[in-house]
Each structure stands twice: as structure tokens, then as C-alpha cells.
Image 1 (cartoon, rainbow, N blue to C red):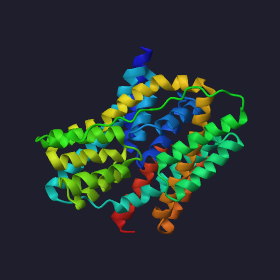
Image 2: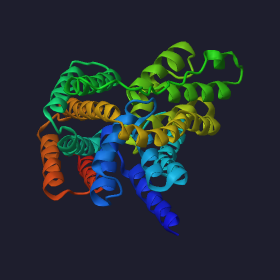
Image 3: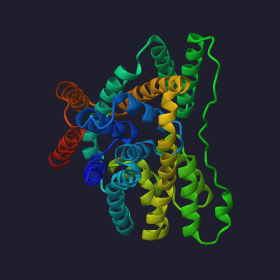
Length: 378
């Protein structure tokens, strides 16, 4: 009975997050931290940070893997499956609907005005989450030094995965400096699954499409924009399955729909091979994440018991905080375009810190502001 109750709670929570979760991995993970750590206290913040650090070291969409992982911690393998599926269902259905109308009418609804009310609040959620997580992660001078270095590296354009790996290595270096007589023990390396390019020898484009996204899901680091770079090189330029205009519209769909940006793959699959293409592409891109997290869930508790592994994770945690702030500031620079968006952003920061307002309500409020601007042409 207890397990059923936990599964029901997980289903309700991740359906909610999947429905109102805008803003990419930083905002989505920030919402998970608020819901799971602060409000429900299902996971301790230190353990949440360890999970986040580990997720950043493996391929796949980070927010999806975090949802899957949290479900696993809460209710085992059934929780893993339920949390991941519930998190993905809303974005998939919404994206399918948009793809249907897009293919029927040839254009997307204009959503920029509505998005102008949501985007500043997403940035506020990202930055306040970085502040809260940073209070736990930056616990000594070494982690502060790592965070500052990683922040600078991220701002000058270093790849996020490299930043995380360097942060982990620095954590180990500080560990061995502090304990000079310690004998190094084995280190665990996460394998990167590589699939062969043989999929394009096949004649059936539906199979080709599915295998392509299965491969990308297994090797993807860096989030949605890296995914779109792959798609531009392969599906647009090399195989001509989409036009550049359709890819740009797919990116827009990923931004204006809730859930992970990678759900734009549903839109792309629909344009290429209709409903079967949408379903199979969606399953393929996210299937490796379920398998990776299933493996990771068994390994992480052992890693946390090793002081060397803990030093590695402490360093990675510092890098994660740095990336959150770097992403937030980059979004801030590109999205606060006038006095109105600046006021919305500052109000968002205020209510999140002062009143700890539910991010879902905050995002819905931003949508209403944007809708009001659209209706009254403010």
C-alpha cells in the first residue's frame, strides 16, 4: 500500500512538472529541487546534489535523467519508469498537437509575446536555485575556488561537459593535496555507448530515423542545443529530411512547450514520418536515459561511501553551480530586452526568495502576463 501511495505521488508530481516545466534543464531541475527537497523532503539536499553531479557525467538529457533518478530513489524500478514516463507525456502530447497543425497549416502560432512574460521568470528560477544549491555545495575554500574557475570557463564558452570533468578532477587534486599519504584507489569510469553508423545502409527511413535518435540519445552531452547541432548536420544538410526552416521551427517548439527541450524530437519525427515517426523517435531518444539511470542508481550509493569519489562529486557539484549561474546570466543577457521584462525578472527573484512561491504558479503567472500583452497589444 505504501508503494502504491508513493507511485501515485510520483505520477502526480511529474505530470505536473512535465506540464508546467519550461526553461530547459536548469529550470526543470530547479523545480525538482524545490518539490522533492524543500517542500516534500523526500530527498536530502546533499544527496540531490550527488545525483545531479552524477547525471552531469553521463550522456542523455539531464532533466529527464534527473526525473527518472528521483523516481528510482523514491519507489525503485516502478518509480523510475513512472516518473520518467509521466514527465515526458505532457510535452510529447502537446508537441504532437503542434506538429499536426504545423503540417496542416504550414506555420507555427506566434508565441513570442506570451514567451516574453515567461522567460524572465524562468531566469529568476534558475538563478535562485543556483543560489540555494550553492549554499550547500560550496562548503569550503576549495569548492569555492573550483566554482569560480568553472564559472569563468563557462562564460568564455568552454563546453559544459569539459567544465564538469575539470571540476571533478580539481576535486580529486584538492583531496590528494589535503591527504598526501593517501593511496589512490580504483576510480569508476562511466562508459559512453556508441552505436555504428550502419543505420543509414537500411532502406526503411522509419527504421533509420529510430536508430539515429537511439544513437544520439546514447551519446548526447550538452543538452538540447547540441542535439539540434547534430540534427542540422545529419538530418538537414546530409540527408535532407528536413529544411533549415523546419529545424528552426522545431527549436521554437522545444522552447514554447513544457518539459525537456529534447521533446522537439517528437515534432521532427512527425514531420519526417508522421505519427509512427514521432512515437518511435521519442522512444529512441529517451530510452538510453532509462537504461543509464538504472545502472547509475545501483552505483551511486557505493560511490558516496568512498572519500575519493565524494571529493570527485564535491568538485563536480561546484562545477554544476557554476554552470547554473553561467546559463542564468547568459539567458539574462539575451532575454531582458526592455523595462517590462526587467521588472518581471526582479519581481520573480523577490517572490522566490521572500515567499518561496511555487515555480509552477510563477510560470503560469508569466504566461498570463504575456497573454494579456498579446490580447491588448501592450
